Each structure stands twice: as structure tokens, then as C-alpha cells.
Image (cartoon, rainbow over all chains, first blue to last red):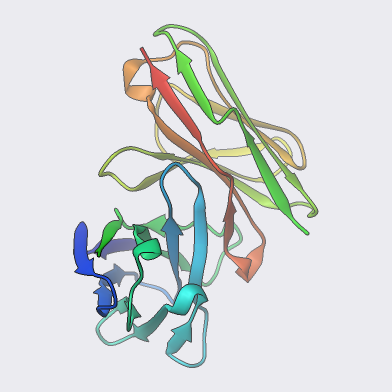
Amino acid sequence: AQSVTQLDSQVPVFEEAPVELRCNYSSSVSVYLFWYVQYPNQGLQLLLKYLSGSTLVKGINGFEAEFNKSQTSFHLRKPSVHISDTAEYFCAVRSSGGSNYKLTFGKGTLLTVNP
Amino acid sequence: SQTIHQWPATLVQPVGSPLSLECTVEGTSNPNLYWYRQAAGRGLQLLFYSVGIGQISSEVPQNLSASRPQDRQFILSSKKLLLSDSGFYLCAWSLSLIGYTFGSGTRLTVV
């Protein structure tokens, strides 16, 4: 079984500042890692994913994340945020094996970008 | 291209009434299908998943049930709603490494 811990439930930042949303996971098997974004009253949209290869993964809207196996982390970063980045962000993990593809999500981090 | 439809968008139901939420997928075959519930401050909780027609796995004991009568149709039901069933319900589909594609969600309020 896997678990995900998003260390910050809320992160307020000013526009154009850099941001890092932290995610740690626990698993006894190899995993795939994902970040999703949710705007109010909408479904979740995939930002980026790590499957294998380069540990630095680039996604949509200027976000990137780095997989660190030794620290079991997958932190999300953006060098300069916009007001429109205000949303809830979810880190998720699934086993790289199996056929049910179940994702385990963290509790989410609410990013609020202030002018 | 693949799309996922989920309806209704919002629903207000009295305690003790039945529930039926429907999710359909277009543009893909034999996807894995999922129902999640999102409660404030609690993240996403996997309720049911299905790897094929008539195959339903339940993740948590509860007042809800799910069915998959067709390959691309996934239904979430309840015979008698409880106040604790209120929440934001999300349907999703997945094929291998693509990750999940989510529907737009249903906001259920049980009164």
C-alpha cells in the first residue's frame, strides 16, 4: 500500500514569487508519481507525472517537479506564480505494477496567490 | 479524443432519498473507471473502481454502491442517503500509464 503526505495544507504567496509545494510518499514498491490541480468546483487536471528517466519533470503552466527517491519526495515548483495559479494541488502515487491503476492522493495544498 | 461526462453538476437531496449519479466515457475502450468522493479538508477518497463490465471493487464500507452495466458507463447509487453522504463526487477513467482523466464532478448536498 502507498500513502502520500502533503506537508502544507495552505500556501499563500505573492504574485511573481516562487513557490514550492511539498509532497512525500511512502511505498514498499516502485511507484509512479503525479501532481493534479483543481480549480473551484471543477474536476482535477493533470499537471505532470513521473514514470521513469529524468528525475526533473516539466508540466503544464510552467510547473515542474523533482523526484527524489532517497528522500521519497516529489515537490512541485514554479519560479514565478500568477493570480491564475490560485487553486488546490494534489500529489498522488500509484504502484508501477498491477492492473487496477489505483491512485492514492494526498489531502491537497491550497495555493493562494495574492496581488 | 477521449472525453468523460458526469452529471448532474449539482444535486440537493433529502435524507432517506435514493441517489443515482452517472458517468460515461467516450473515445476509449475497456478503461478502468473510478468513483472518488472529496470532502472539505480530507482530500480524495477512492470509493469504487472497476476494471471491466460488472466488475466492481469497493474500497470502503458505506451507504453507497456502484455498477458498470456497459463498458463506458459507471453509476454510483444509494437506496437511502445519509447526511454524511454530502460531498463532491468525481468520476475518472484510466488506461495504463496515461494517468487519470477526471469528470467535472457532482456537488451533492443531503438535507
